[in-house]
Length: 375
Image (tube, rainbow, N blue to C red):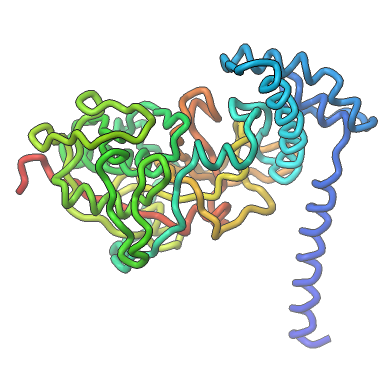
């Protein structure tokens, strides 16, 4: 057998293994659903039974879900509609769990939302633009094995975007907050609402695509706005409402300025080096597995690297995260989300590192701050 044939055979075996995993992941039973419904353990594998029997207690668990997350419905019709969606999402949880075995998937505060509702109200990243202002190449030889900007005081508490497609503003403010901390030694929470109300900056490569508050935007164009406007106000001076409003920016109250920004190479070593040197990084991800994420290191078999729809903040990385004993532990990124501390791991998401899972390496940007007195 020639070397060429060996390569082809190896590739075919590799693809076959992936197909087997996907086929296995697509079949699930009542035992899986019963595990999903357990409050103490969102997924618990026992013996196989008829799938539908696993939904018999769904109403009891839906009642618990409604109470836990303080859900309010307009009447019996909406209650029934949300219960139907809830049961459908239980099936999605089981499917996600089998495709993403290093994480725990289960019931979250988004379990009564359709996929379209989840995308419209809780994401908000537009199709990415690739700006030709690459960050300088940095040395990677002496990077620490583990690193976390939270331990160094550069990260504000987890915030909540609510039912507004403004994830891009939280990713932007998080990066500028970190850069300002590195510049001044002071951590100041910055205003997302200023970006929602005032930033209508357009993508230079796609002039028709502009930042649009709760209807979405981009972190790089938000940096452009901050440069042109002269900076961002504090959160306390321009508080978040989660709705589109009239711009009330007061330049005399600017708390942070942007000096410059750049995009980072998809090389994982360069991303880690920029994170360590320059502070938390704004990144885009595909959030399909985040609707059901409860904890652990997420490393799904199948997740689009191109369809990025959620802006988040990369704050650190780890050498190896916990995974079930049948799986090898994987290095991971530590990601700050904007859905409040009652989602994920106290508001954070661990995504495996080294595979560009869910496109996490595809759209990364770093920003440098100027002091507020610089003109």
